[in-house]
Image (cartoon, rainbow, N blue to C red; front, side, top):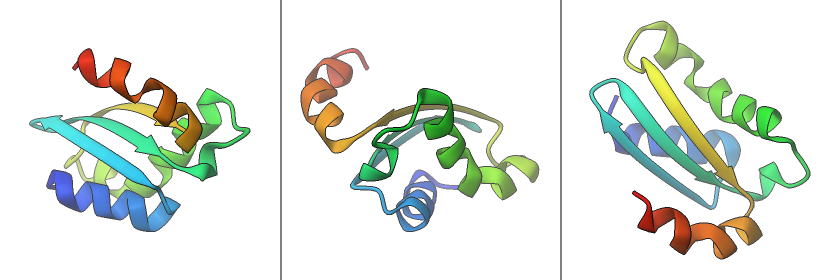
Length: 86
């Protein structure tokens, strides 16, 4: 699965404002930004992102996933700091 395919799948499934996907083989780092995360705890946010990835994880095309989620307000505040660390 390409980064672009994964980004599009997450955008379509969760109506996200922004998705950034980076990978090293079958290991993916995902940053997901959307209003759908507002008011949710970290575990619930990650469960939302894992949901659309279930088939790709089951067939082995996605082996490991690191997920960071943000509401639009959190992303506006934290974007610069997070991007500097990558």
